[in-house]
Length: 163
Image 1 (tube, helix red, strand yellow):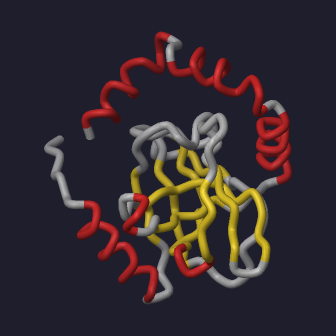
Image 2 (image 1 turned 90 degrees about the horizontal axis):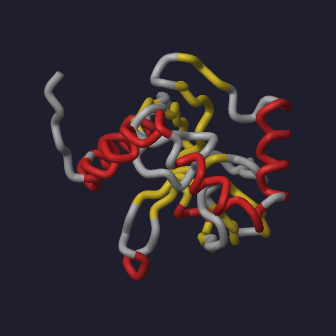
């Protein structure tokens, strides 16, 4: 299958246009900032427009300001305090972002494991796993290092780095 490379700004402009119409959008993800819950290069994420009901543990797509590179990032909400939202990737050992609600563009409503098997990221089972993962933050970097270097994971990391 032939791959087509599209500029991120163009791609997300189209995604946002579809979301504004009240429709859902399924996008591929790259990178490993959401490991082990979302695997870049393997999983797909179904998004809908973010509403006013954002809360802890929601997985959101947000746009970083120009000072932070103007990138589009998908991470998990740690806390919401009025207009201020604290966000951190599951696969990020210590850094987190502080964003405003207006920077949050979409919310993940489903993860397609391997691009096929649907997973509800907000099911009680998934939230229990997330909360456990958040409690072991001091050792996450070691677990992530081991996970990324398992023989069956090495190939997709190399592929996602080149996408």
